[in-house]
Image 1 (tube, rainbow, N blue to C red):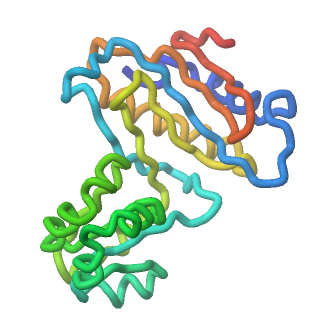
Image 2: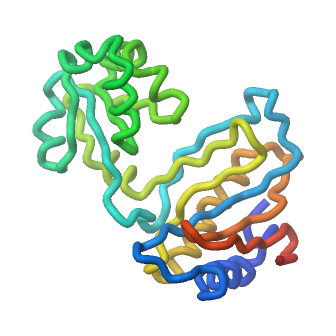
Amino acid sequence: MSVATSIARNSIEEALRKALSKEYNKARKFKQSVEIILSLSGIDLSKPDQRFTELVELPHSPYKNTPKICVFTEGSLMPEARNLGLEYITRDSLNSMAGKKKVCRKTAQSYDFFIAEAPLMPIVGKVLGQFLGPKNKMPIPVPPASSISPIVDRLRKSVRITVKSSLSASCKIGHEEMPIQQLLENAETVISAVQRRIPHSATIRFVGFKTTMGKIVKVFYGGRKS
């Protein structure tokens, strides 16, 4: 099922423009994010193979500010992490966090994405798994001494899509000052990613768009709008 056959491109663009209009998006004192919400049907969430978390790389970075990425390293990734402006946590620091729930919780909340040298993954799981797992933030494992620059570039344009506890998925696709065509391309990428992951018997009931504090505008499957 393609985006073109499910929801017309012009309907998506029209909904985005409406969500950004003064009627649906009152001026605020901060730059608001633009979010996409997908309502799904035909998925049995009691079946593990129908639940998923997907990391989706968008054509255009959706972030107002660069997302925070942290690297778990025994040392080989430190120089590149520094050059990329990333924070890092060493094996010793990681071990010292064991049992300190407040510190672990703060670490999980402080970063958007994590990268880890593969040999450290068992320690990360033991120390931080209960805090990172529920947030779908378990690190991307990489071989020691490998370059993390391509992964960082990808993460800085990526969002998480999760279908786990409800028949819906949502994420940011940009901010209100982005060109409408960039928002449109990001939205289509998210829709396509969800369509690829849901079962053949499942459908997208509607796609909605809203700013952080704005009202939702929905585009229903088949092009019906409200």
